[in-house]
Image (cartoon, rainbow, N blue to C red):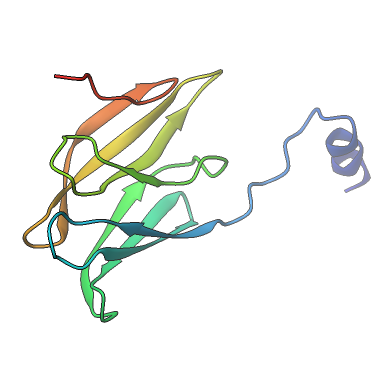
Length: 126
C-alpha cells in the first residue's frame, strides 16, 4: 500500500480514472424538439441513453471504451442540421478516435457509422 502511494505521488503510476457522467442536447432541424443524451462511463464502457423532450427514453446503447479523460460530445458531422454523437474510444499522444453515431432527425435516434479520429473535427465547406 505504501509503495503504491509513493508511485502515485511521484507520477509513476496513474490513479484509476473516475467514472464520468455528462448530459448533452442534440438539436434536430426544423420544428422538431431536440433530444437529450446522458452518457456515463463505468466498467470500460460509455453507457448512452437517449430521451425525447418529454424525458421518455427512445434509445440505449453501450460503446466499449477505456477513455474517461475525454467526454462524448455533439456536433453536426454530416451537414443535415441534426446533432451527431462522437464517443471517444481510443486516445493517444494528441489524437483521439471517436465512434460516430449520426442522428436520423425524423426519428431522433442514432446509428453507428464508424470511427473518425485526429486532433479535431471540421467538415469541408462543400
